[in-house]
Image (cartoon, rainbow, N blue to C red; front, side, top):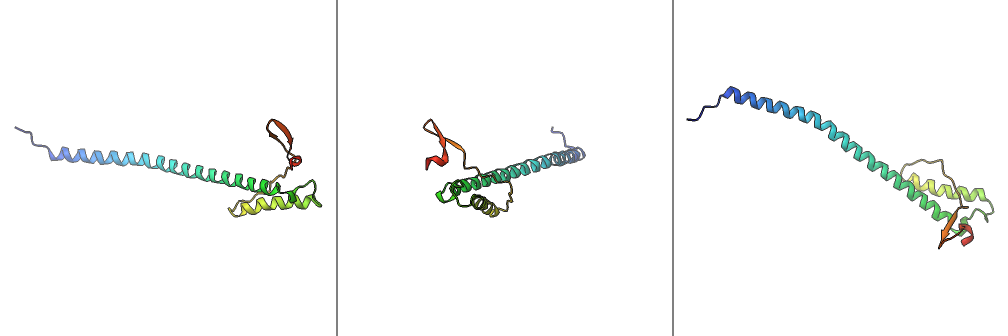
Length: 122
């Protein structure tokens, strides 16, 4: 013959099970929230880095144009200002403020094993 289950023991077993689920949920939710916020923050960091790299490329492209050469310009300060302003204008589209922009057209580049000034290669 089968034993008859005791309703009191069955009820307390379900109650303990519900209590352990609540405790596990209370431990897991904060960890998942921290993980989610970390992933979102890392995504924003990567976005900012990509925007700054693109602004740098835009400034370099604009600076590489023949009419923006500082060494042959009538007024080198105005030319530097125009290049900086081009980068600042790009960054303002993404609500990024940057006052620390350096213009250097006197860098050396290597092409086919030969090192030369970038300005002399025009």
